[in-house]
Length: 494
Ligand SMILES: *Cc1c(COP(=O)(O)O)cnc(C)c1O
Image (cartoon, protein in one colour):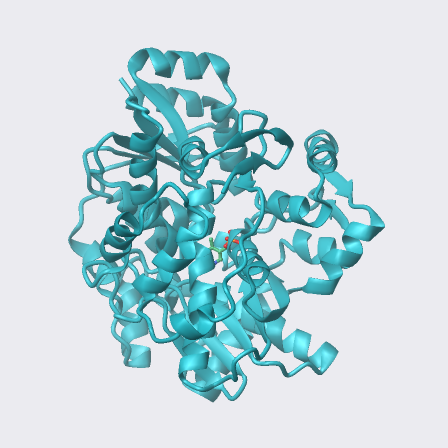
């Protein structure tokens, strides 16, 4: 399996090179040259296996130079009982006859980022050995909340790694911020940036392409890589859970072999839904991919019109992990739809220069065959949380609620009642304030007391990693202007 940049098919990379680099030198995303097909009987074979075995099987298709033994060890460590609070790892909960919720938040940071970020450090450190890279890798992360904590937890005290996380000062929830600033580990750093997520992400991209900084780091014995979902090592472990969800539905006889399902994903950077698309490309019978956005609905418009236009108001919503106007991973989908690196490069140049591009009609048609886009605002998000709780006794977080709203809109518009898997991306306890509000509470306790309030209200226990924040000490409190992120890097890597 070879990997290419989404902007240049000339140079070929191995999987371990792709994972080590994170981003191609031309700014493109390193992406498999083709998506392998699962053998005919694979889903049937996989349905009786554990999540860990499914992960090994799916990832092996993309990782030639990794042995099954290696991947088995990685999966055991990443998805074992020390990390996940359920042996199913990513359980599917049936909400009603044809609506199934794929719960991706049973890991150590209670958000779906754990699914990939518990695996990435294993893939990355093994890749460093395979590529004979002896410098220390410095992972830079821009986060809208959940990636930062997931990456810190995944990489803490991993030898030969440092990790530095930038988050937007006023763009994450209280619990999310506490999770990050109390992070333990000798190789970690956390800095807030004045601005929104796009400012932090653009700043990190700028650090990556800063040649002087690169040279300075090299002198100090470091090099940069990324744990953002632009890294192939992030996207790959996410394909697994879509395969796994299909297998669970088969195993539990909720669907017949070969039966088509739809998938609905609350989307920000387009990593999660891209993984669903790749699962489809591999041969999982997925019909439509429903892309759910909050008020930052740049993707809804793109899917409907073929015009990507980030020149619009940015909203801070109650689903902050989706407050994104530049969805980096869309670039990989564009490559798949166009099969033309020069075309992708052209779109990305336009995006950089003007904040906007329009895809060719042929590309738009392909896009619209598979993807349906819907969005909803905070008011609707709260309505859905309340409604789900009342009708199905099921407590969901605001991101997941955006997806349920999208599914409702999709079904209303199309009448399509195909079984649908909705990706549930965070524990509701990460967003206590918004969730309590949605359940009708007018007075919400501040900080961690809101965890108890939500527990009392619903009778559900707060996940242990969140309840445990109370006894943690704040270790980080640096804030920088977006133009001074470089200083934070240099002081961390002294
Ligand atoms: C990151 C995140 C998303 C968005 O996922 P993308 O892969 O960026 O599209 C949605 N919900 C939650 C809770 C997240 O943490």
